[in-house]
Length: 81
Image (cartoon, rainbow, N blue to C red; front, side, top):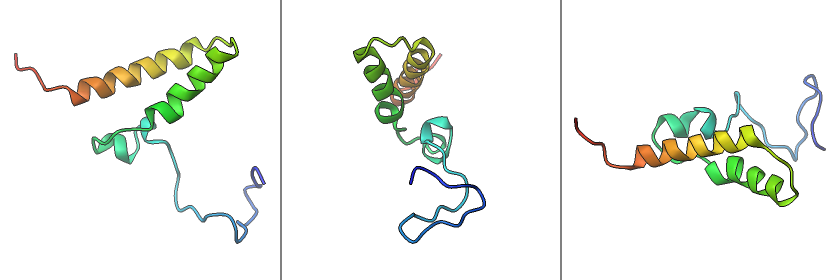
């Protein structure tokens, strides 16, 4: 089952989820705590798949690049002024 209506109860084989679920790259727990986000899985893979079939995704590419740069900047040693 791909989804259910908001008023349906989860079945026994569906995991029960408490509270809203968001990828870490949207600013949730891991990103706030300084841990790596799912960059390649959430942002890189869709860009690569789109390119492989010739579909332009300029905004997605831009977001992927920006998040990648932010992660790289966070990991590099801080420079003092």
